[in-house]
Length: 121
Length: 133
Image 1 (spheres, chains in turn green, purple):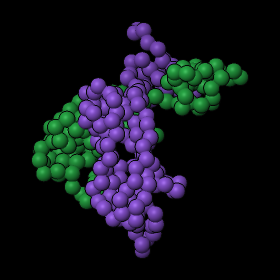
Image 2: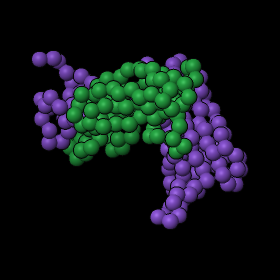
Image 3: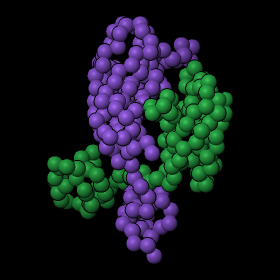
Image 4: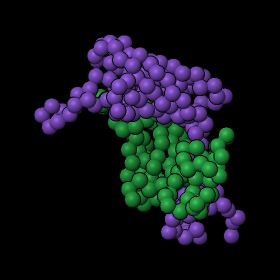
């Protein structure tokens, strides 16, 4: 290997020869940061219809987050920004809060994941 | 001092206390892709609310995400989004295929689409991460 690296290959991958980060559980070299996202917090919240729940993340910048809603018992749907028709559930982010919003017509359970990773710099 | 395994970003100090300075740090969980797969579906013409399922074979409800690509197109689009084919200040956005959502339960991943034109194939790449709880 012609460069400095720490590589952990996935099953069946030769870490001594691969140069494809997609083949690796961990791929660190001296040219590119192949960053693993780092979890800060996770939780659940019940949000009333037409309600909003602020989750303070305490980071002072906008972090990477994931959010899901239990759209029916035992069925979890991934959330993005506000749905095109303006109804349903979504989340927003700012430097203070992860904001869960619900206009679905009934109270919903949300699951959320906040990461340390700054998405604005 | 705690015993940790950490790898700093290029040019950063591995003794930093800022999590953003690290490629990985054993103080913080990193999400793992438990399952990655592809599925090709055929959307019926001029039909909304079309659902397709894919068994994930996991013994838990996974966090899921997905990307879609219409056959013959180089665009990839996400759930809660239109596959925008044309756009402009006067035209606005036009597209016939909408990826409404992706969701999972203890058995299946479900992909839901609208199609406002003729029958079309869509290729999906899906990702299951760790358990929802």
